[in-house]
Image (cartoon, rainbow over all chains, first blue to last red; front, top):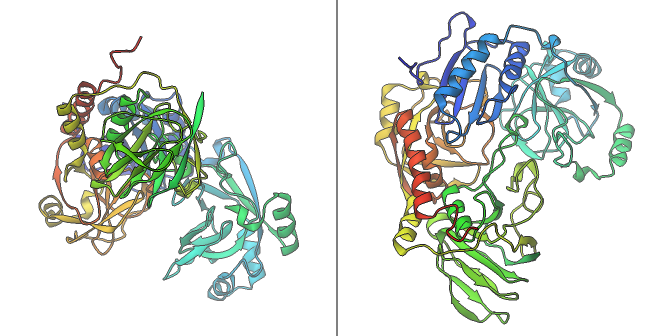
Length: 247
Length: 326
């Protein structure tokens, strides 16, 4: 008998539930975060060789979605192929995978860091100590979402864990470096946003003229390098664009 | 050979769209594409284009555009009063939906408020030839890509258009025309269950498939917010961000259902109670603020059969390969 495609995902022993979601995706769902390495292993196993009819593989913390064209691929066949590849995707850590390292220069000075003081006060630390903490570790881009090029960066030191703003700002400037919960992130476009802003990078995070268009890709190692206002201005000028051009 | 189309009056939201941009969702880039793909396909076929040729999607009201070259156009989807004007802006004749029309150099096409549905398509033989970005010409505002800089068209904009379609334009029988126009105008959307059933009790599921919902004014290409009926959630905000699909019905903590549209976010943090089936996405794209809709549950096999038979019906009414094809 064919498996019921709408079964409630099993959550036992870290075995993911695999179901057809909608009439054009296969959803792989873990009960708990299996870690960046396991998700990356899974993504690679699903991506190559390409599964016929599959258009997108979207990863998040505990869920991976394989989106296909139901006119090109039979959902039961995609489901079976996903199961087969999942069995072959062994556990690993993110360090086992070759990955890009992206270093983002960040100015943590006013007016780019409206929430730095309140986070420092909350953590009972000086602002310079907080900057050292934020820029002193490597982050893993767990997944992209929210807006084009926005990466959820894992690895934020615990002192910087903070809730979102109670009332989101209606406009966050492009390049704003922010924190919320256990994540850090950089806003690629001017959007509304509820994360707390502690600095700004002069680099363009998303540029459709580049290949790939997103500076940060899923699985990348990301580091922040503190710069002063003068270097920020110089890097903006070097990019050949005004601040507005960062969009 | 190519020419240009110049926007005289853009209408409230006119966008270059093709069948969309698969393959970039992992970068946070939505698939985009025509909200009513059925109407885009039909209009393109009638001017002799491939289904995926880019056209202009108009929202709630039409545009006024002039052509600097002889061209063949076809309007599809929701229609408004459409007039062909000569070079002195004098009305020449009416242009009907799903009837390919020759336009001479210097003439213009003026389309009024759309009726019946939310979106109309202006398909042009040879297609709109703006740059392909990440594999598609579709406009995606959040990414700043597609069309002209990822934005809605504005007065004075000039769009490159092809003049050579893959095949000659052709006409279809009146009955076929009527049927094609009616296909995306259904107000009952079929759904399959969402992945977060455990976050909704029997009462919530019953409400979803028995109550009527009204499309609010907050309805755009990102999402359609529904009003009139709320859906109770057992544990609001209980899920981590996860991949989303066009047609996913998210439920916010206050019980408001939001249906994600082609420009919707690739990941989202609200639980999904159901997903509109692929065959009914064109109907979703035609919903207007104030429309009353209902949801009916179907199983996966029914959903797939509906999609296949819809495309078969389109092929019967309006074959992709015209009889004149060499």
